[in-house]
Amino acid sequence: MPKEELKTVAQNRQARHDYFVEESFECGIELRGTEVKSIRLGKCNLKDSYASVEKGEMWVRGMHISPYEKGNIFNTDPMRPKKLLLHKVEIRKLEQAVMQKGLTLVPLSVYLKQGRMKMQLGLCKGKKNYDKRDDMAKRDAEREIERSMRGKFQ
Image (cartoon, rainbow, N blue to C red; front, side, top):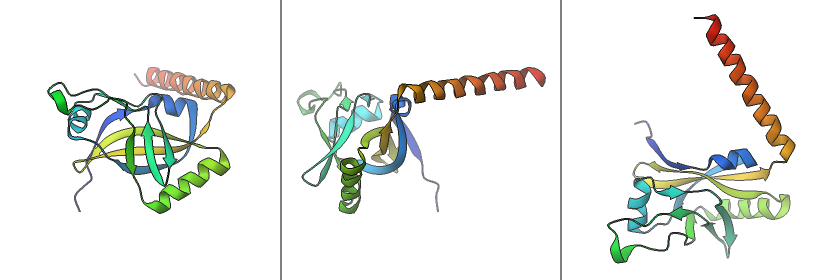
């Protein structure tokens, strides 16, 4: 079986800083032609985007896709809500988690998988300020350890 090729187009790095990712899901995105071309060029921004469930359908809001330069009249609104493609069972599960546990649905990344645009959606819990400081301290400590190890072996 051939190895799956993933080409990451956009990432939401701020999401991992602001939230604990409890679980992640892969879903498709319903896009128009010029949006796909623009995303392939890397003109997609996930900052401040979120997903919500309305009438049994999953939507991502706040995702900015820059208009395609050669798209003329076929370009759409860059901030329009985009429909996410998931099974009904998954949508119900996510909706219950958001309603009961107070979790948030945050887009983590957009990537190409076998020629199709996919999104990694995270079921997240918000971090407090002290959690963020702890993470920063751990990263700094690991960086210091790497530096000292690199100095010893040279």
